Image (cartoon, rainbow, N blue to C red):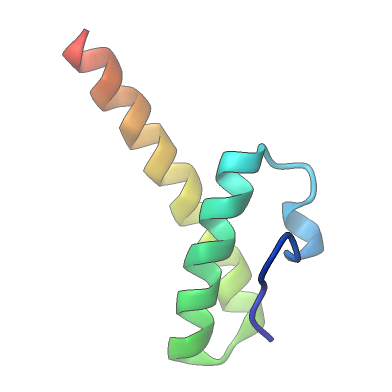
Amino acid sequence: MPWYNGDYPPSYKNQPKKIRDKATEIANEVLTTTGDEGEAIATGLKQARLHFANLDKKKKKDE
């Protein structure tokens, strides 16, 4: 089941909003590809964290 409009997996509950939103976006894409909710949730969160970690590294590098 895809997640929309503030509906997200319970494991995302305590994540910062920007990570939760990005993770939900990624999880929805994985879900359409694989159909596996567990994989979608785990992949979404992992990739969202990596995305923002890379942005932070790039931002620090540019300063």
